[in-house]
Every structure is written in C-alpha cells, then in structure tokens.
Amino acid sequence: MTTQRQAKYEKRLSSILRAASKVIAKEGFNGASVRDVAAKGKIGLSGIYYYFKSKDEMLYAIQQHAFSTLVSQLKERLKDTSTPEERLKAVIDNHFEFFVQNTDEFTVCVHEMESLTGKYFRDVLKTRQEYFGLVRKVVNELHSGSKSDADLAALFLFGSLNWVYMWYDPEKNADINKLSDQCLRVFLNGINKT
Amino acid sequence: MTTQRQAKYEKRLSSILRAASKVIAKEGFNGASVRDVAAKGKIGLSGIYYYFKSKDEMLYAIQQHAFSTLVSQLKERLKDTSTPEERLKAVIDNHFEFFVQNTDEFTVCVHEMESLTGKYFRDVLKTRQEYFGLVRKVVNELHSGSKSDADLAALFLFGSLNWVYMWYDPEKNADINKLSDQCLRVFLNGINKT
DNA sequence: TTATTTTTAGAACGAACGTTCGATTTATAA
DNA sequence: TTATAAATCGAACGTTCGTTCTAAAAATAA
Image (cartoon, rainbow over all chains, first blue to last red):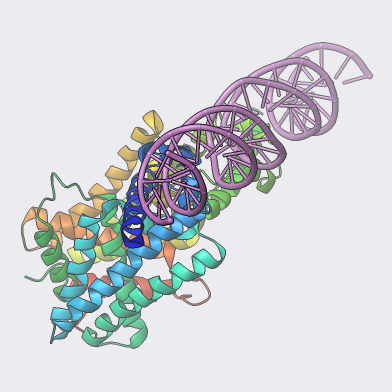
C-alpha cells in the first residue's frame, strides 16, 4: 500500500514544519538559517530540500496551513451561534485557542506576513483576507455606526488578538478562557463598564 | 565654535537614522543590509561605521530615540488632562500621531523589538516599560474590575494601537483624528454602543 | 535474494553578509 | 598657507548564507 508511505512522508514533513516554526518564531525568517531548521528537525541540511523547493516554500507551507486551519475552525464555530454576541465570542475564542495550541505557527503568521513574495505571498494573502472577512462580518453585525467605523473596529480587534504573542506567558496567563472573556468584555462594553 | 560642527554631525547622523529606519521598516532588521542603509543614506559602506559601532547600535539608536520621544510627549499631553477619559484620549492620540509622523521608526520599534540583544535590549526594554506603565496607569484609573483585568485591557489596547502599521494607508485613512476617535469610542464603550 | 524507489548525507558553489583598515578627501584652525 | 582634525572612501577579511550535486543508505517490491 502506498498510503503507508505517504503517511510516513507527511509525518516527517509536518515534524520538519514544526521545527521550522519554532526556529523561525524565535529568530525571525531572515534570522533563521536553513541549517538551524535542519538541526532542529534532525535532518541534514540538504535533506530539507527533499521536502521543500526553497526556504520560501517552507514559510509558505507554515502560513498557508495555519490560516486555512484558522478559517475552517472559525467557520465550524460560527455554525453553533445564533446571536452577534455569540459570534464575536466565537471569533475571540477561536483566535486565542489557536494561538495557545500553535504558538510558533501563530507567531510566524503574525510576524512574518511580509516575508513572503510573489505567488506565495498572494496565495496566503487570499486566505488571510478570507479570515479577516469573516471577522469583519461579525463585527459589522454588532456595530451600530457606519460601515467604515465598523471596519476600523474590526482592525482594532484584530490588533488586540494578534498582539497576544508579544506578551502571553503560559506560566502567568495560564487560563485562556479568562483571556477570551476579558477581551470579549472590552470589545462589547468598553473598558470602564462592568 | 564647535557647536556648529556638532550640529552638522547630528544632522548627518539623524539623516542616516532616517534612511536606516526606512530600509529596516521595509526589509526587516535581518533583511536590511548595512550596504542597503548606506546606499539609502548616500554614504559609503564603511562610512556607516564612523557613526555607529555596529548594525545593532544603529537599531538601538532608532528604538531608544523613538520610545523616549513617545514617553516624553505622552507625559506632556497627560499634564493637560483632568478626567480618566481625557487621559485615555491623550494616550490614543499620542500613539497614533507619533505613528503618522514617524511611520518608519514606529514600524521598526513594533516589529523589531526582539532583534536587539544584551545591553541594547535591556536599555530599550526599560524605556518601553516606562511607556507601557503610563498607559497601564491610565487604563487602571478607568477600569472598574480587578487590576489583572485592567492589565489585560491595557494589553488589548496596546495591540490595537501597535497593529496600525500593518494596515494604515495614508491615501485611504487620511484622517488620523477619525482613527483616534473611533479607537477611543471602542475602548470606552465597546463595539455595539453608540 | 535482487531490483527499484524513497530518503538521507557530505562536500562544494558563488553570493552576500558585517566589519576592519589604511589612505584620501574635506573642513576647521593656526 | 600650512597644520590638524573630521569625514568619507574603496578594497579586502573571514563567515555564513541558500542552494545544488552526486553518492550512499534505507525501505519497499520483485
């Protein structure tokens, strides 16, 4: 059966991607050498090029996979909602949960958005925009002002959600639900309301 | 008079820093070569090293100057306020105004926080923390919940403010005051209140 | 087993990197 | 004008970079 071989191949590939995410999250894309990634992935330098055409393709694989997951999981969550408030909660929960469970990939997505070029960039951009489109729609439902104000609000929300990788400490901010709840509270009622 | 010479030196230095900010904002710190910076600054490659010990020192100079400015300007603004709401408005206005007037430096500060190491990193961190401390204090005054919830709210605000460099388009989002106002509205009242 | 394909390893490539150095040009002071 | 200091330059250094190539090892199929 060729399925067994494929499964093994894909296990190895995703283990290399995990190693790559870790190194790139820490050193940045330009700062992370293919040699670093190879070492972390327990493979020879040239072995990397059996799985990827180039360093760029590696970054592309990480980002495309992450954003696709983010989109499909959010769609699933939104199915179970009936009010705009519930949908906003779904957006926030989904984002934070993905971050906690895939910290390195998340960091690479947020911090290395502009490191891709050409077709790789355009491909990921499309998925990114699909994700942002879902979020924007949810914010729009909730918003009472003009559409352009709602779009600004969505961008502010996005900033709050994405910035988390800069300060989150799993030791100190253990409870992810507290994070989500407080974020939801702020964006529903503002800072100074209960 | 030696003052004249010093003034000329500092003009050149800050013109090189401006060029460096532009290149680093665009290519990232690791992606921007000293040769790129030299070309943009209309100076020879080795000429850079007459003004800076190293590439790291260059990044340090950019960040330290930017955060110091951010801190001192915010302090000035806070002097003219009397209510917590006014102080929050001062924070938001200050941040966005600095961004619009120093887009490249801002971008370098937000995006290359982790590119510094050792003493350079610790020095900038201290100024960064002073700035965040001011913001946190303002949020705390306004917040009715626990202190840890207020700290989270401050981090969410910080995210919204810092994320702006990822989407702001001077052609499309011309009016900076509209930006500030909408941000203030969201963080005072939430998304769904008028 | 042998034959074939998939996966890994080592050595090497030219290019680009940050930095240094000595000489040269430019500006100030005498 | 000559002497001194400040500013710039071009060439070169040792490293590290992404990538390629050929051969060897490991796994599968015959």
